Length: 418
Ligand code: AMP
Ligand code: GLY
Image (cartoon, rainbow, N blue to C red):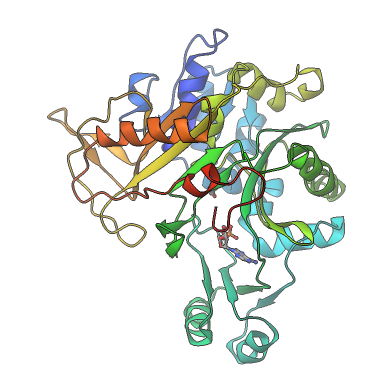
């Protein structure tokens, strides 16, 4: 396993629970994954180093968690070393690595998405802003860990953000605003172009309760969606993911791994906000809490082009909720080095944590822990998640109290703001 977040902790936990797994390594890992896996050091941004580690370790399967290594070509290097790899090659990971490329693929594939324009010259910015908004959606074209997008009713704020990027030499993508609840649908995709959707989930992007404040990497999630039609996953897989997968293959960049569609459910149907080339964080934490199908076999089937032979996925019938505990300052500059207590509790997944020489677990970044609860329904899952949150202490830490709350009150239609 390559990566170090709560997503990777959830993946390692699920892999460890698959009887087919005899040994596990997670690099670089965190204080949580250390209890389940060996943690060899590696520079994850260096594809050759990742492949060398996999070879040294005689890995049967390498699972790459974050987008950075994928966009850099880690999956290419691992495959070149003759080792099965879960995760797309760099050519296909571009669907996340460049928003402009993603838009090109969507246009060619007829996938519904927001109209957009790439601006690379400050002289063209004002005219372009006038063709959009309010609200304005201004995106950094590069990878930005979920924090590169500003959505604002204030033209001056939009303009200032765009200029900061342009002044740094980075192109800006202006997007038409998509109105509607946001959902995430993850699909396993293999080299034979078999597409297998997981359960749809809802991710809470804004830092503050009631969906206010800046965007984050994700402050919580729940699954399944009690308000969504049962056909949502198969519909999106057929109308959105399948055409994108076919178009990537047509361009000589076939996708293999997990294709994440971030969607807005608009009055005109689902439209793509973004594609990601990997498991999402924190949605993975809730999906894996519900998945009964052994994970290693499933990821191996994906990596080796055998998804068509996979038996239907088995899910727990209930619901799961994850609450992210973030460090003081996040999503700005997080304070690190705070001593965390209660982090060994049930359902507590580690993200930015490390073990100090004296044995204490301390915070080491923005999103510090993911606390997962499950139950017969969303309300029960929420109750367990927040009970577990009570037992964790991170000085200065903050979390949202309203993860999944509105959805517990609304079973027959999407709640405004999740
Ligand atoms: P992205 O990095 O493209 O996923 O954008 C991060 C977040 O910004 C999304 O999850 C949305 O909440 C918001 N966002 C991005 N694009 C749009 C859009 N076209 N309309 C409305 N909100 C958007
Ligand atoms: N949940 C948002 C992301 O993983 O990008």
